[in-house]
Length: 272
Image (tube, rainbow, N blue to C red; front, top):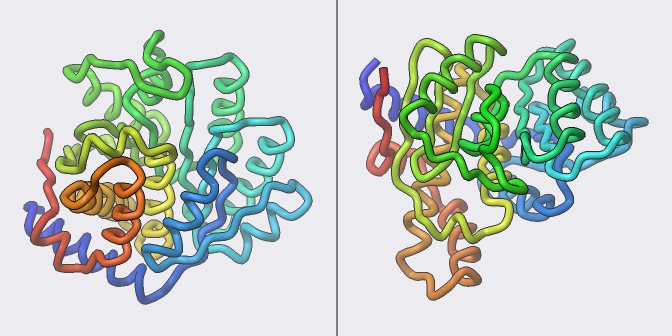
């Protein structure tokens, strides 16, 4: 399938998400929870945030997608995530894992591997450092930030993990790389100002999860989410004076995104 056809499909998925307004259940970190809730509403979906293991299965059962983000991990949160994950797999609800800061601490690594051993994920999305660390490369993250610079091997890393976990693997950065193990794409564009915005990566996870809820083609849904942030991020920079105005403009640009914007401004490149 050529780029034009893919962009048309992505535009269609965006329109379906806006029309269906899916409910996206987040078990996410305390740092970015407000940004993720605002993002869900801004793009036209509906957010729900709940951390208690006592209700995570029930909350998942009434949702259209599940997002698990380990940015501020705890034992209680892990228990809630595992219960929700099992329910999602049982009900064929799409699940995205965001292994924030994987590679930074032993506990954080154990949480991620416990989740990976507990169920299946449609998408695993992290920055380049987190994805590199997940493949076994050491020294790829500092705190929750990527310090991985070996772009020449990231494609092999992403494709290998996609085959291992039978998931769409996304490594975000200046250019986002996505693979299902067979086809790989670069997603270009965006703005360097996104790197100064707390939770911008988590916001991408929210956008993708909202789109997974309405499409069985998880590769195209993920491409759509990555492009949405790149297009909105690039537009937001045009009339921003600093990070404060940029954040407000980013929400505005996400809010106004239309189907045709993906066809006209989406920047993807097949990387085989």
